[in-house]
Amino acid sequence: MDAREATRLLKGVRAAALAGDRPPAAPRPEIAESWRRMLAGGVHPDRDARSRMLSAAETEERRQVSPLREVLPVLREGLLPALDEALHIMVVADADGRLLWREGHRSILRKADRLGFTVGADWDEAVVGTNGVGTALVTRRPVQVFSAEHFVSSHHDWTCAGAPVHDPRDGRLLGVVDVSGPLDTMHPATLAWVSAVARLAERELRVRHLESLERLRAVAAPLLARLPGRAAVVDPHGWTAAVTGLAPADRVALPKGLGPGPVWVAQLGDCVAEPLPGGWLLRLAEARGAAPAVSRVVLDLSRPRSWSATVYGAAGSWSQELSPRHAELLFLLAETPRGRSAAELAAELFGDPTRTVTVRAELSRVRRHLAGVLTHRPYRFAEDVEVELIRPADPGRLLPHSTAPAVIRARLGRGGAPVVP
Image (cartoon, rainbow, N blue to C red; front, side, top):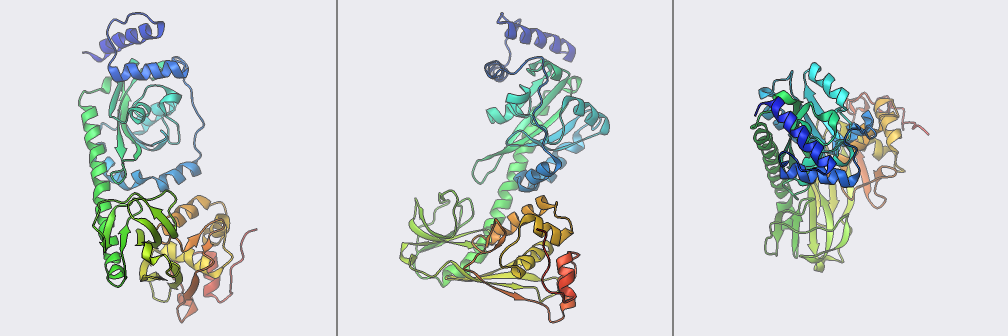
């Protein structure tokens, strides 16, 4: 059907649905269900509602923690080359319907701006009505919304196709990838295409997960070889990397908020949990009286461009190589046993105490590997963990890449760094 003719028909269908009359044609089932939700929820059909926009800092914080960040290259490579960039926009939203990324030509971005289709905007179905982002989040299925299938009339000049992206590790809904444009750009194959790219993104996440399990398995093998009793090594989602004295299981259901120390695990019973890079060592009941999970950390900054944190515990030791930024952060925390707030760390890293979003995001990554070693509020090493800091023999060679004010002062031998109040 011609796009303009289809638009006229759909406007008649929508008008009849709003008036409670018999429509000239039945709306598609997924659209009819969405309209019923909008009517029940009180969404105004002719008023373009907007919720509070995320600030730039809030948007960046969500980007940093979103697993979708890892698959942006897949989404871009799968969609952008085939798009007419002057007519289409690609957006990626999180599971709350917040738009975190968008790409397209300046001309189409300006049109999207007028619609409120901007980074930081909330496109939850309950806020802006039936649409390719919000409705896909509700139904958990790919959906195409054309012209007057949008519940809110201001969206009738657009067509969109959105597909959800799930985390293959736990099935969690991560967000939606959507391609939108003016109504005359609608093509019946668009939805299948966007859906296929979403599946490619999920496949990439699955491959990354298998690679992370292999890395965890390499850490686990020497630990389990010298550990008496029964134990399992799992990733943060409970997927098993290695076991000793146990029948292997693909996955173990971990309790929420898992931390170091005694814990009850449904499939294993009483355990002691110990943090590993990228996962957990679960020692079964006979090890309950063992020593604390982590007793000592050696932060070695003595070698140029090769920094590490070595963790010692009851099951032995393991090392984690550090990025330049993570080496800076751990150096600052080792220098201040009482701990530092995000603002204090930002001041000492960047000379700007307002850059807390970056600090929190980086420390979140560090704590994934050093769970049980670092605590927060304020950020610091755990009280029962002995910390040894190995510096270069020449103070001037301390983290030579770093421009952090605190590190520069340490190179000059001026001692500890002052912090903001």
